[in-house]
Length: 130
Image 1 (cartoon, one colour):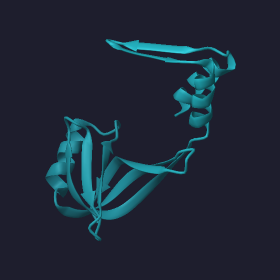
Image 2 (cartoon, helix red, strand yellow):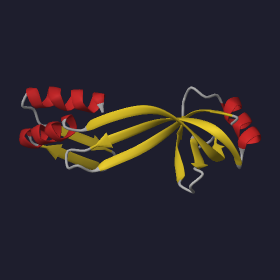
Image 3 (cartoon, helix red, strand yellow):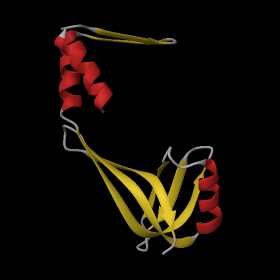
Image 4 (spheres, helix red, strand yellow):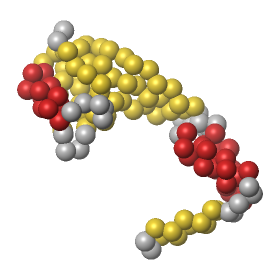
């Protein structure tokens, strides 16, 4: 959110309009709409927390960069694989821990939007035996 916030702040402070074109898509924001957008983006709260919990590792896909685990209570958690993990490490996790109980370290990202809505996403950091 930091880059988007900085971008809208700069455009808003200069009372500028914003025009974006991508292929056949085109959008234009007036200076009032830019200020409103900056207000919305800047009021968003982002928290991150490292959590380690016992879970069943369901697997990770190297091609998509996604993983899935299941908690002992049956809750499924999925998300992105950390860019710090190599393909070899991910393949090893699949061999060693698929459908096995293990300790999973995740980065938990909680985003609270200006309207009060909340979104939680996860990133797989590492896995180790129980």
